[in-house]
Structures are given as C-alpha cells and as structure tokens.
Length: 307
Image (cartoon, rainbow, N blue to C red; front, side):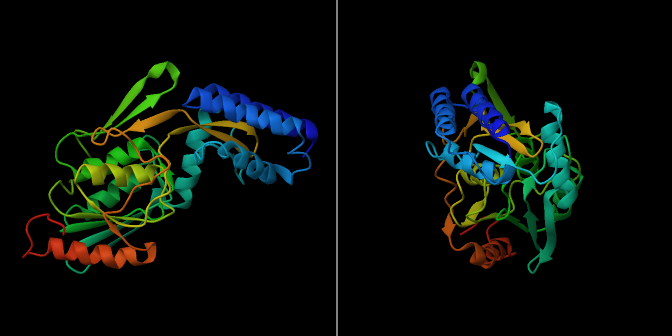
C-alpha cells in the first residue's frame, strides 16, 4: 500500500471518529492519537489493507476499549455509495447464513432449540428466516435461545425476537445519540407474522464470551425484563450502536454514534458484558440450560417458572 494512500485512509479515519463518536472528547482524543501516530511513521510499510486495519484498530481502542470502534477489513469490495454500505453487508451475511438462523430443532420434553448467528438481521432488509423460525417454536413448551454465536445485529432484529416472547408492548431500550442529543426508543411490535411463543412459557438464553453487540442486547433485555434466565459465560461488552463509513474498497470505519440505556437498569452492558444468571462454560451451557428448561416446562412444574 502506497504511503499517500495510507495517509489518506488514516487521516479520514481520524476525522470521522472525531466528528461522529458518541462521546465527543473521547472521539477527539482517538482522532489525535491516530494523527500523532501517523506523523510518527507508525503505519509506514504496513502489510496491505488488512494489516493497516489491525494497526489502526489497536490504536483506536487503546484509549477506551470500545470494541465497536474499528477500521474493519472486508474481503469483498464495499459499495461506493454511503447509503448502500449497511444493506449490502447485511445482505451478504444473510445469504451466507440463512438469514442468521443457524438451526431449529425439537428436543425431548417438547422444547425447542433455536440457534441464531452471526447477526440478528434488520427486519427491513431480511426477516423471512427469523419469522419462520419463531413460528416453528411457537407451539413448544419451552425455548432454548442460543446466542453463543451472535456477534452483532440490528436493534429492530432484537425487537422482533422479543415481540414473539412477550404478550404486551414493551419498552426495550433507548438510544441516546451524540448528534443533537436525539433519543430513539425501541419497543416490541404490536403485531407479528404468525403465532407468538408468548410471555409465560420458560425461556433460557445461552451466551458465550463471543456473544457481542446485538446478541448482548437481546440477552440483556430478556434478563432484566425477567423473561429469561441467562446461562453460560459473560459476554464481550459492546453496547454502543455504530455507523459504517467506507474509506477504501475493502476498509470500513465503524464508529459508535449512540449509547444504549435500558429502561429497567438505567444503564447498559458496555465494557462489562451481560452477566449470566447461571455461570458455566460456553461448551457446557447447552446441557445446563436444557436441564433447567426441561424441568421448568414439564407438566408437573409451575407454569413458566425457572429454578
């Protein structure tokens, strides 16, 4: 990669972070850190776009540990039009992963295992597979919702899943944006396609150390609404929704532009992750969660109660 191109990419990354990062002072400091390192020659001779992405990401996160703040390398070329970037990335991921539904199966005790990942799709872009999966599990006695492989997703995707698991319209989250101090609330939907699983049957959410971002919001919302028990490992801790900016055919600057505020806790999971109710390894989470679910969903158990 030519020196002039490196300087252009790093300079543009610094400008975008300074201008858009959710906390203005933090964004300014991160931008100054990049420009200082650029002047010092830190990025000279990096190994291509992927190497530059790794070096810049390490410097961006050095001051605040925000895992959403990155220079992200993509193997496939990114669209040049800014408005197309998010949709193109999501559609590519949807085509590779059946819309983010990795598996649905019926387990002993008439309970369902629904495995999602790696993204919770934005319903405005792709919803067919997720709707079909939620319809399939609606008639079972209990749900094992597996988020161990979910590394991101849309708040609207979170709201769609929650809409099938709750009976009443529910305030899930509020996004406080830097730009104009605007607040956007996320609520469950008044109507969903097909039958709901409902708000009384037991739900166990499985998490792992790789669970991130949208997967964390879904686990956090269901936990603090008292709708599900979380079983597994503490999650990674990324609560700031981000916006993407193309600075090279294969490089996207991802900048957190808002902070999540849960209406129950008044805070979020940024930097701390979602703490499980029952802590176990990600590998053992399935067996542990299934045991809890089968006990709670048996005909002899109190309706919907989880130990």
